[in-house]
Length: 110
Length: 509
Image (cartoon, rainbow over all chains, first blue to last red):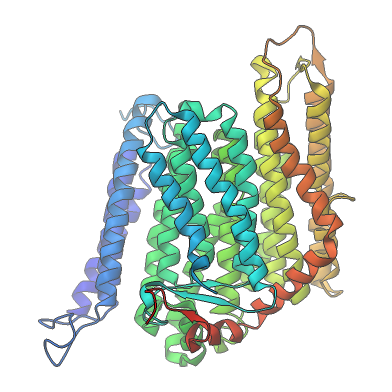
């Protein structure tokens, strides 16, 4: 399972970085979303991967680490807000600069 | 010590929330509320600073969960100093805005308060993930502040700034995740102990996480390969926002100082002092590139932005040296350079409004109506920014230069820092003569210079540096002790983890 999760996270990071480097606002925002998903999974995996083990102490003999789950929750909320802001800004930039290039001078995509 | 430690976070938070509730057209009420909050932060920060002068470290356990299980706020000398710097910078910037610049956006004051909250929180927190959260708080406020006033240029600069920082946040989280995965803690004091005790099988992962963190902080501090966002972002922002942003790069410097003296400092075994090797060349290169940029700058805001890169390079070169005298020079110079660059940004805003079409570009324009007060302030600010005597920039650079032992390091530091200063003097004198002396025919129809705004500039570029020279002895005593505290992190670790001085936050128990 660990290998599978690692490969998934790796592919998502690779896709995210590729999209980030596309220099058009829409792919860049998609890349950031992809990257933040990968990061969230990564933090979650850092609490070690367990199957069918509760995160609350006292329910069973074996418990998984609740801290990464709390961290991921915070990271998701922050990432969501930041993505919303980036989308708004990208929309405004594309109307003000009349281009969806991140430098604003690439002209419209042919 | 009691609940005072959390007040620098709670006060701007409350003020910001109230400002959001205030009716949209009640500008006077908003100004009053915002200025009151900034004014209260000043004695608060000074009081907290006084508490740390005896070398004690205050720990505030949020929700009464003691470290390492809960999040703690830690008030040591460095944190107290940064709080005071924030308060001292924020008040003139806000005063300047309250004289008219805040009419261009409804939520300026609320965002300003949230930014202050993020800054204060980042300086106080003793937990790495909490540091991330406060970084995000100050960043999201800064995104909106950067766009204050609108316009194409701000939109373009804002887009770069936001996207870069979002990518940086992802890297921060990856580093935090690795550190947690290896050590099982995020409390900085606890991390320091675990890293020191880590075996060689874990050293590789820890090293990777440490360098990732360094990358993130270097992005915030605008170190060489990662500074290209700064000149465009800072010169696009309105004057008071750029002035407040003068402390944003220092948040990066602060985080580097904190993490690489405490967690990966001298006690970290295999990983001891790993930042210095990377910081040293990057800092000197940043300084050199900043100087080149200053020469090539086409308007005053751009020039001040590049001078800020010069100062970041100087500061981080001192951090890389990692000796007590170099660190105290860094702390002293940081205080000076933040105030002066903030003041120069405000001054650039005033000049821009009084030169008609030309703005603050270095082209011939009709003479400004009130050249004398502006010219005097610019001259004093330029002396401060270039680090010439008699102002405090000279003292800071002098102590930094004399803190390095003769040898190759000295040759590099002296030649780059002094060369950078010469170039800064050149660039500033060129800017001054273009702006004030080379005038074209005609007149500019502009309102007279606002005295309140002039006072704000004078406070930052004259009063601050002069006071720092007059009271140089006590200030240096303080920064020397701060550097000593940073280089001996055992006191910090023992206080945070030992429970000595922990205040229950949940009332009497």
